[in-house]
Length: 391
Ligand code: FEO
Image 1 (cartoon, rainbow, N blue to C red):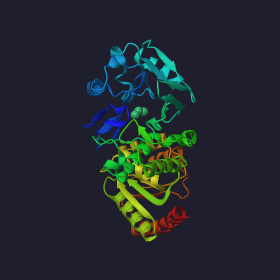
Image 2: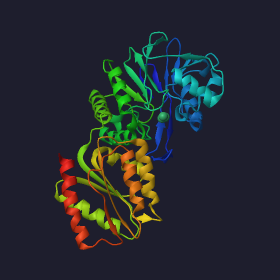
Image 3: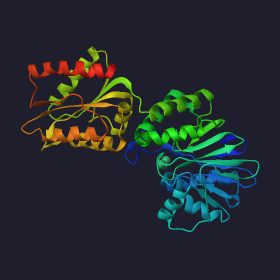
Image 4: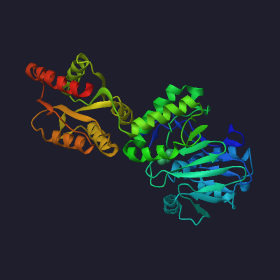
């Protein structure tokens, strides 16, 4: 697992992970830790607490842990710092290198007085033939997040940025298939990084002039081919600017098939209007997969029946998630079926607005089962939505 001369991957492959705090991970994940051999051996990031034994085995095969002089903690979240307390017991000389926010957050988590070296953007740490240059990247995606650039190897240890949840023994994206890994990186961005476009742009500016040979995220596969690096950096630029495609996503749940009927008709009419449309039933699709479609789509069309004056819980969960992730530069449209009260639709509309979307058209809400005249009304709505999508 030597990814470059003297630089070893020492992480943990989480084959069985199926949910990462609510984000579905059918392909598992990895927590990437790297051991760099030099006069002052350095470990970059650790792994989840339950992956400690595997990480230690990988480290111990290469070096006696007590020789480690620095452990760089690029990010406090427990998938990367969970094994810090145990590994530090084995390397008493080691200093923990982190951002100022990282120092506070590590203290809040572990209540320990470790030897700390606090670094800021541009600071350099020499470990022998190599040196590290630090780039703080606050809110990509925690306040403490930072990346570490290793010279002269040209490797950027980017922590969560450019990551993907994918378990494999292969370490490089091109070994699995770049398109497969791009798909996972898209889902990762949509669910983890999406709210922080402005901060991502700052990171892209900060790393723009670095000579890169590899981008090593803390999850999943490494981007080593120059065309793959260009591709993922180009996608991050596009995603950070909240660009969308001329597509629509119809996302709904249904109780007695009326809302489904409206969803089906809208999907048909949008297809006729030339709009590529994803129709997503929340009974079958996890909200973290819905987010991948939302990130691509210019129109986010959400439908629900009314249950006890509210939308269905599945739709409620999606809206709460969307309000947090705030997919800007998109517009919304609401539809659904109701029996005697439409009040829940107000919450649906307000939630889409809170998620950062304009609602240029009035929602289509029909009592119990839509009739022919109501279904006919959807044509005008889909024409208008279609024009806004294709613009
Ligand atoms: Fe992979 Fe924010 O931790």
